[in-house]
Length: 179
Image 1 (cartoon, rainbow, N blue to C red):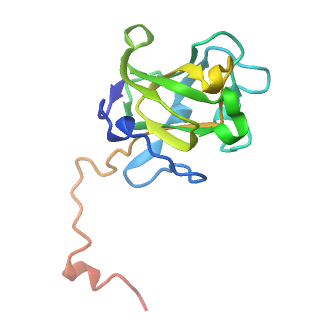
Image 2: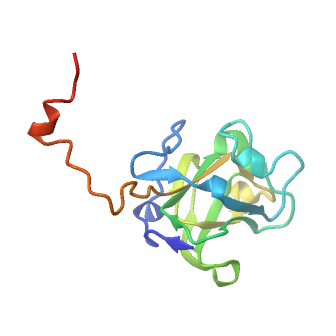
């Protein structure tokens, strides 16, 4: 797996945007549906499906000893720009992770930590780079809640190798509308 930028700027200072999920745009697309998602454990009815359902009222709840793992693995080499987690200390209290280890690699066996992050009462969307290891919960809670996860990769250029005119030139924009 190729990481677009292993020292992605938002890793060093995670940003939050409460109630505003990071979305696909002209530069990036959500690629989580192309991955195999694995959780270290999950309570019945609180697994991968709930992480990916775009509903902030559902969540993954781990069910076992720490640390808890969320692993996202692709069947082919993928360029990954960022991973976004929605966390909500106000609702989840001690179930909310407060220490994260971001790991990347070409396979499960060679994962290396690229960033360690401590969060104090996190609320909203946090954007990082790849495999996230949940080391500890708020107030030393045993299990964890993560409400949503999205993973983004760059959009591929659609017209590679084809030569199209620049439709922004004055000569061509004069024909931009029809009466």
